[in-house]
Image 1 (spheres, one colour):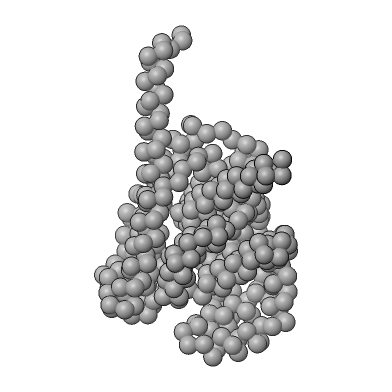
Image 2 (cartoon, rainbow, N blue to C red):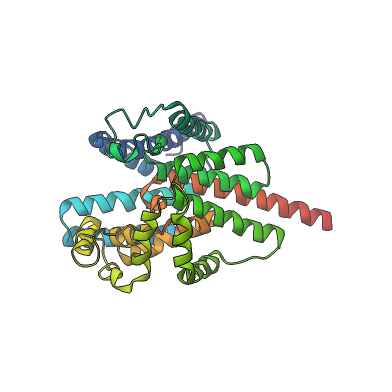
Amino acid sequence: MELQPNIKMQLTVNKLVITPFINYSIVVLMMAQPLLGSTTFGSVQVVLELFLWVLLIIGFNSITFNKLDILLLSIFFLSSLGSFFLNDLHTFLLNFKIYGLCIFSLIYFRNINFFPKNLIYVLLIANILYAIGARYLNLWIIENSGMLINQEAYVYSRPVGFLGSPHATTNFIAIFLIFLFWQKKRLFIKLTLLFTIFLYSSWTAAVALIVQVGYIFIERFFKIKINSLVFFSSGIILSYFLVEQALEIASNIEGSRVYSFEILVPMFFDINFYNEVFALFPRSHDMLIAQQESSFASVGNEMGFVKIFTEGGVPMALITLYAIIKRCNYFTVFFFITLLHYSFFVNMPFILFVSMTFNKDLRAMNFVEKLKQVRKLS
């Protein structure tokens, strides 16, 4: 039976009201998830993530799927099925949660144009003020609260910000800063964000930011378009020959945390480190670390891309990385470099959401710019 016009109109109005509510709810839950995950409120985080799952599934009713979306879902469910039979329940559920939220976010926010600027700006300003308050006013509120799991590592050392760790917070600020660099404006805000990044002292993200800005500079001023993967790979090859000099320079810089670099370098360039990393199905990252610490070094894996391949298995990791690169292409150099230590684009939906949202905005700006050039020529 066909719906009456007034009923159709009511359903349309309801959908228009519900969809923004769902989108705001999803983003707020994504923002809260990493902070809760870094605290003793683990049970609250689990409940929050279940709500996030439900909202993403509800949101799927209003989107269309392309071939890549279907491939993502197919490999996710097949890999998870294998993981269910091969792993203990905790490992299966953890990996299912990490990749499920990542893939569902990749699909949902490809379809949804939602840019809650005020919400993102509030979080950005809050993290700027928090870093200044901690460093200069000795207001280590989160670190001294007693709820932070790794409190002793950060109190009076590095502020964690409102994403639960200096690394995650710095990634968020750096992504925002890269977004501004692509726009060629707002110098004061850029300098403020750069200053804030150094207050958080997360150097992998800082280095990734600098290299990404260099990549933008080459493209913009020298008019040279370089494939981001080629650019990154060339840098890795160059670093192999300059690693000793880099270690020496870093050791002379106060607060450079060179010991992290000293741990990562032997891992990255030693082929023996990758034994049993690239499996077909997901497995336990904690178990991999235990194996490495018993046979390779006193410290197990510290690299983000190894964690991604371990927790997802090769097929799921590859298709997920491909989708992220395709849907966050303005941030790929930054993404590649942070993978050497972090995996926030995969295990933190908010970072993925921000990158995809900014990427859409940059694509739209680029399209308008090209359209203006065509009109001038014509």
